[in-house]
Length: 189
DNA sequence: CCTGGGATTTTCT
DNA sequence: GAAAATCCCAGGA
Image (cartoon, rainbow, N blue to C red; front, top):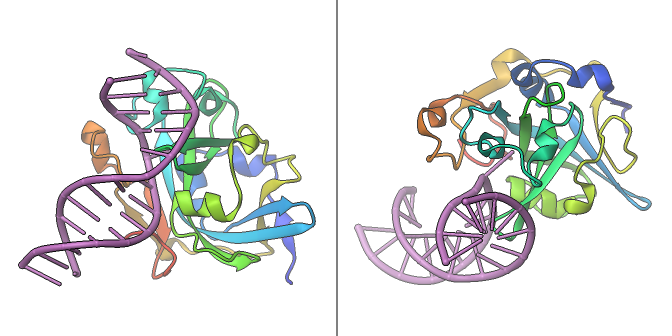
């Protein structure tokens, strides 16, 4: 197994869109007891600012969305449609609502079910609300890592419209979804 | 191939 | 009581 380097605080301290692209090709690591699950991030979506109608935060700060207003490097996990959890990484400084939704992973280790969709990857990783607000910089259960020197080239990154945001006015046209070109684990093309 | 509807529960109005 | 950053399957073309 090659070396995994945990991503440190300074990785999260960059602009949401740069960070979204930087997340592609990184590894999500989840520890459950002695078991360790690893998946490679192949698809993400950015949700940025109070103006973005696709973002929960556009309706203001509530009990549910307040984590998006927290500082960068925290996990924001919520239940959608009653059945599926979604994993987000909070970005930007405190009181600015922004997050990156992890949409798809490529299974690397100990993953049995498919992970090509935000609901499915949370099921596979046993991510639920008990990890909501987990700090990815210091957590032992859930964090991000990269293989040494590995980097995704800009030419490998595809920009696309976000999914499931038809109600978001002109924001629905924003190309805030990023995925790795020709990767079969991406949920949609 | 593509489209449409149902599942199911938390959160906010 | 309605909506929600989804997924899966059935049915028709």
